[in-house]
Each structure stands twice: as structure tokens, then as C-alpha cells.
Image 1 (cartoon, one colour):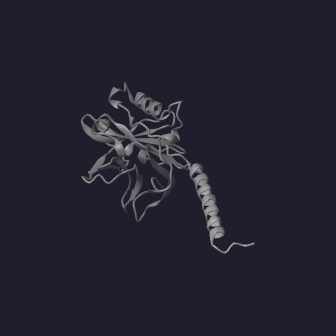
Image 2 (cartoon, helix red, strand yellow):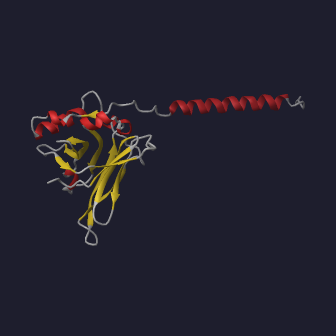
Image 3 (cartoon, helix red, strand yellow):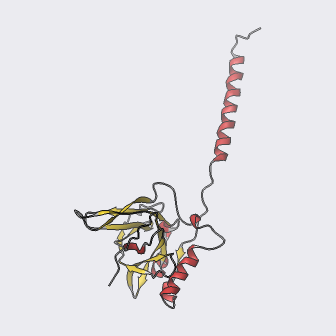
Length: 216
């Protein structure tokens, strides 16, 4: 006999609720765990014996055998950038190679001491066979963007992972934001009609820019 006092309906709703909670728990468990917090990629280039040693210091720090390189850099869409880089100057500009820029996971919590010593804040990946003189990008290359001081002056150094490629010293501009708006590392390409710039957070309240052109 079918009950009409509502208890059957209440029991059915309770069972459905338990099923829903079980499914939600299964989906929550299936989500990926957040990546582990990584140490800042601090590299003291002032201790390098020569240019080749500078490259070796950075590549050894960024490519340790015990940790995949992707663990150190944020590859999620939106926190990095992916586009074709400009060659020439508009209105005579043309499309260059397609390149990604991805922030180092520790770039949003660097300290002043880290930045004075020097640290890698991003990497640039050339997805094309076209080299790009700025940013030291060879064909199918991965370049690491180091920021710090050289002879007391703030500079960018773009370290190519290609054999026998020399470090590329470029300019560095730092913008200060007292409100510390950056809660996670970000890297972007900045476009204007005359040039192309790399941009990235270099701690929670500062962002770094470079045109990638070699310093004289």
C-alpha cells in the first residue's frame, strides 16, 4: 500500500541527496591537487667565471634532474601569453615567430634580496623555426629571463638553452605598485607600433619590463 503521510517522499529525497553528495565528493577527489610551492630561481651571475659559466649556472638551476622543468613554470592559459612576435617597425612590420612566455611560479613572492642577487622570472619558448634576434631566441629555443643587477645597474639577461648561445644582456624597467596587486605570477607580451616588450611580475608589488634589445 502506498503511504500518503509524506514519509516515503522524505526518505526518497534523503537518498537522492546522499547520492548527490557522493558524486560531488568523487568529482572533488578527481580534481588535480595544486602544484607544490617552488623556491625562487635565484642565480648569482656575479659569481660566474665567464659567459659560458653564466649559461651553465642558469640552466643547471632551471633544469634539475630531480624535477621536471614544467613544475617551475605556470603553463595554465591566462597566466602566460602566446602570440607571433613583431619583426620590423610598423607600418613596415611583419609577423615573426610564434612564441610563448610563461611565468616562474615563484615570481610573485620574490624578496628584495632575491632580486638584488638575481632571479629567473619567466621563460620564453619559440614554437617556430624562425629565429628572433631580440630576447636571444633561436629557432625552436627556450630562453630564461633573468632579472637582477650587473655592476650596480638593473638589467635583464636572456639565457638561451641552445648550445654555444651567449647570454643576451638587455634593459630592465621596474614599475612599483604600493597596493601589491599581484597574488600570482603573470607574464605577457606588450605591443606597441614601434616595438615589442616582455612583461612579468617580479614580486607582489612590482612588475618588470624589457624590450629584449641588446645593451651596448
